[in-house]
Image (cartoon, rainbow, N blue to C red; front, side, top):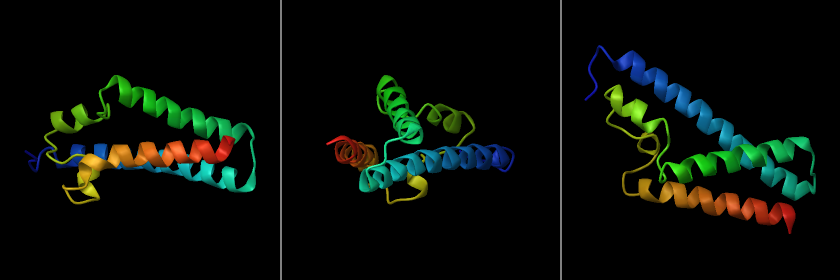
Length: 110
């Protein structure tokens, strides 16, 4: 449960988490731009590598972000996706991003 004492830490980890999320969404967006333009350069492969690495990390953590335990330790009772969407949609967030990423890879290489 968040208390006034741990709120700065919670806000800090949420901010870091949001910045990391924005990085990965930017990588995903760049893959779509590259697929649209037919561009395949080092940046495309770096973006793809970052997203695939994220996928491997999530896979080894059984679908849970490695930052989630830090949130919980600090007393944060809300998950990352709970900050942005209704609770009823949260279970579908990771499958949605898997589908969107898979589509980007298909468009990029096929």
